[in-house]
Length: 199
Ligand code: ZN
Picture 1: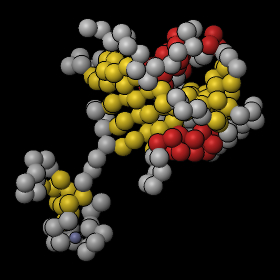
Picture 2 (picture 1 turned 60 degrees about the vertical axis):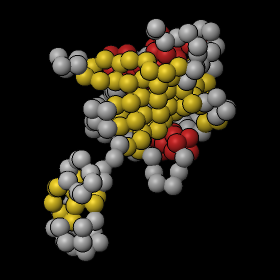
Picture 3 (picture 1 turned 60 degrees about the horizontal axis):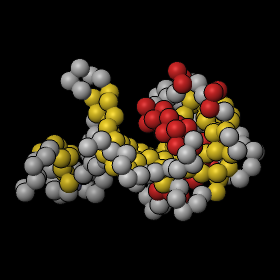
Picture 4 (picture 1 turned 120 degrees about the vertical axis):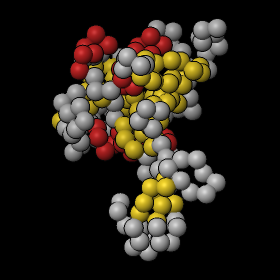
């Protein structure tokens, strides 16, 4: 954005009075354009012993497999957004229970927050949307672990197959960060299953 959409003035980066960060500000009317983290919401759709994955038709990570997820829209809830993305990307209808919230990932290095919900497929009718090349169901042993698009998706799937053994699905919050050596690591910050966090 180069020009202010309120007054057409030029936008410059400066630290507004009383602030500590550089912001995009209109040089003419003084309005500040804040940029804040984005929420990405999605589901882990399952039916019987299988989970649904979508093969991405778009960049980034085109051709790799992911869970249906996307940016929240204004005016919708996280869960509604996740169900909408599942319909758009996978043509799938899901039903959720009141314990559907499953994983939350903080990604401060790209200013994003991911939220995944467990969601039961209502039926086996689904079809790829415009952002997917292919949509299919996988048993655990069929998951293409080397072709998963994003670390948050891989991590959510790993937790799911582990939790399924006990049929207990605690809500977890995980923070992913890069070390100085540029290695991505994830840390479990919060879990609704008492005793899971290291001391
Ligand atoms: Zn302006």
